Length: 469
Figure 1 (cartoon, rainbow, N blue to C red):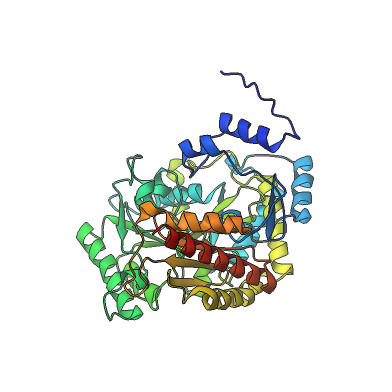
Figure 2 (cartoon, helix red, strand yellow; figure 1 turned 90 degrees about the horizontal axis):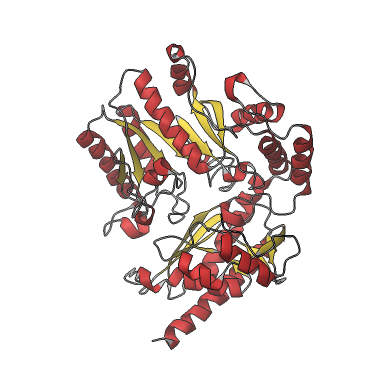
């Protein structure tokens, strides 16, 4: 093992931290060679909707970290709960019927909040591993009911369900597949439910939804209903574009799934815990999932924790597996007591401060302000979103909806200018869209500042584009 010549001690200068990071760190979703030249931006503190870097520069983080810091930064209530629990019981596993008080309380609380017919909660660490758990549960379920051929999974193009082998296969972004020998052969992808970019000329939202439902049914029938196990969907697609479902979409899709006995998995990793102005997106769209996936807002990112929620239908089948002796799946850190303690206080804050209501009210204000400021801009093709999640789609030609070539990296360039304006938004992968998903504690005044800073960034980019010819 190589010995570092850079002492890793507190109080380093920014320059030394950057040097150490380039020496030792392997960053996710990062251009690796470029990072070795430029190094990281080091974030050192945060409060409310703002974070500060190691140079003392402050930013409004309109992405809540990565869609997750719902209660905002600097919540000492959660930090204190983490410290108390770490002193009392820092860890114990949940294998072989072992349990701890915070995890028991959290499971019961989630079960009370979740939409029917959810019955049981299985804890993991990330949204990715929760979706992997759901895949294994789906395959196990069908084995138990005597349908061992029912193993294929349907997801949508541009979906984002995680980065592990199974969850990355479900994700419908080619960059997540190239070079990794993915997707798994059991995973199929159907059309993105984005009316603005995918609808035919003159096709209404309901007609578009009906066509997409027919595609799902034709896929099931082509593959064989006895081989198709489950359909995965985010209520509002997140990292793949912030795409709310078109009118009538789930209303058309769900009967197809029920008709062919295909389990319905609702991925609430981003939408859950108030992002849309409801506790869960399933409640907003009247969905009854067979399984649900939770993470991010469950602890607001203060600790890593995820959950797979299992309906009574699935659970009752799992109970019939006694011949196997035990349920042979789980993680060392499943139901971690410190993570559960953080989640309980996080949920307290969401309830006590009516952050779900704030997402609905302030979210509506934010959506109006963002549209009013940029929807008529010549480089903006569409502004879309719901509650406190939104996206701005940039176009080379507004009338023709002509996309910029991805190699021009238009969205990352605008995101970089926004950063210079003191605003963190996110360039979404394989697209020309930028996303916004601020903490649910955001105020109307904060929203005005987000919109103003983004509008300035857009104007600066337009001038830059014009200057470059």
